Amino acid sequence: MTEPDLDQPWRVIRQDDNGNRYLVGRHPTREEAERVIARLEAGGHKQLYWIEGEPEAPVAGQ
Image (cartoon, rainbow, N blue to C red; front, side, top):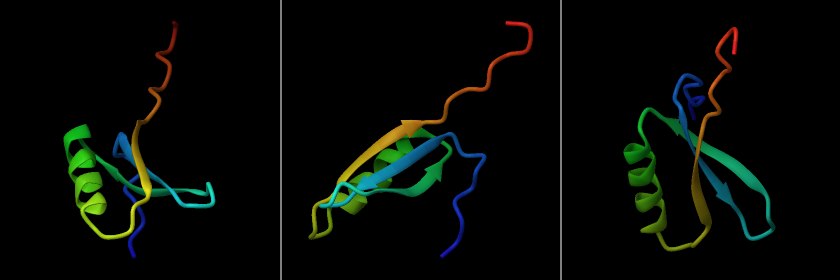
């Protein structure tokens, strides 16, 4: 398994039946993250998935 690319701004998160949360992957666009969730949800076992955007770094001087 490869490490997620830390430069990708959209994170797909999974929560299991016990409430544990895991980073599934990072993606360059929200649309790609949504496609990943759709593919995962099409499988048999249902988990809770959602997308989080990476927080933007503050701009210097603001």
